[in-house]
Image (cartoon, rainbow, N blue to C red; front, top):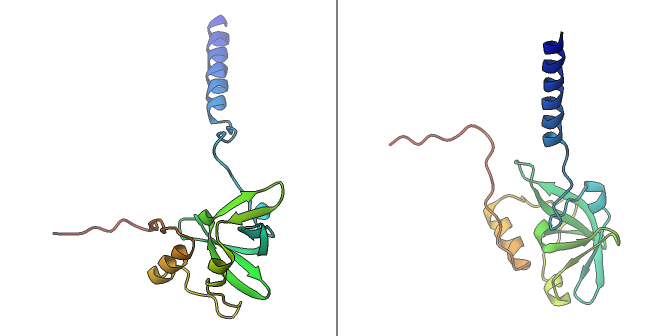
Amino acid sequence: MMSTILHTSMLAACLFTASIGFAAEPPAPNSTHFRAKQVLGTQILIQGNTGVGTVDDIVFDNAGNLEYLIVESNGKLLTVPFEAANFNVEKKTAVISLTPDQYKAIPTYTTTTYPSFYTPTYRTEVYKYYGLTPRELRRLGPPVIIKR
């Protein structure tokens, strides 16, 4: 009987300890996590705290990484790499380090003329406007085997 109680207690202690290891940890102090509803509707500002539009949509790659913000500005849309925006969730704003002249040079489109977000030329061009280099896209699917 005592042996059964000891084994049960030991098992319960192990399970409790294991469950602590799997508990959700708070985010690290220097990491930031966003939820879609925190990002959508965010006012976009450029240098000089000039409001230029709001986040209307977000674009994910095949691996589930947030790639772009789609910003609506006076009926036009433009693509902003997610890395280009510095968010202030409390104020529901994001700042992009662009001058007004740099911002005016970014091509716009409409809801009927969405670009091909993942063509290499488009990605490189868009990131260049913001002074960034696109990260390498991860491929999903079976591994590719190269025979020699």
